[in-house]
Length: 174
Image (cartoon, rainbow, N blue to C red; front, top):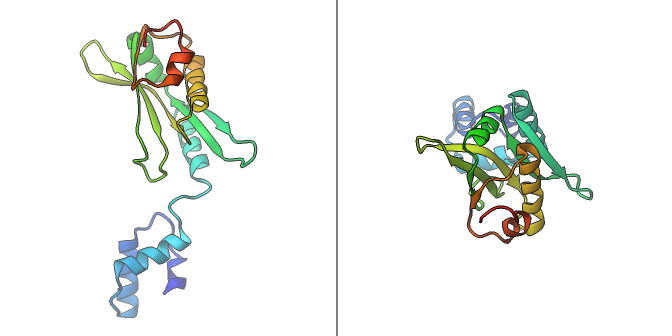
């Protein structure tokens, strides 16, 4: 049965595999055992995930700024933006809100959101970063990429009082 699992692809759900194996071999299997074997063959975190994400972004009109670690050759920082995000920033970028999630995705990586409000009070996204850690150096890189893309500093930045923000933006009220 384990050999059978290898013939599926990583997009097949473990439930579908379980049902197939039960029907074919006329046995009752536990979901956990099928899921465990499935993940041995198709791990959640693959070495190609970052490349696939970057490729998807670029093929769908998003800009991606990235940093690759010299030693491990892994992506450590990404900044993603689109034409719509650029237009939002141009129209509503006087005040930006910066906040990061903390390990709430399957990769356990912080996602930093750059957002604001439209003239009608609706949220709009200016860009987002996926980073491997929340050090001052990482935030410096992220902000340098943000302002390299958007060219000008906002009047006000609202954040959770990150020291990296204060050291980078001397002309902005934080």
